Length: 66
Image (cartoon, rainbow, N blue to C red):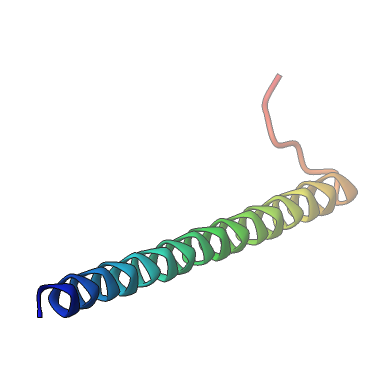
């Protein structure tokens, strides 16, 4: 009886350990995807800014007064 109880507790602990591992993997994936999206957004903002600067320069507009 005691052996069965100990085995059941061990099984539950192993199950919890596996669930914690899966949760950790999901968190890492979520954070990685969020970082990738932020990087893409930042890249698009830089491209837009560079495009606007080029357009202003092509039109002879000055961005800063000297």
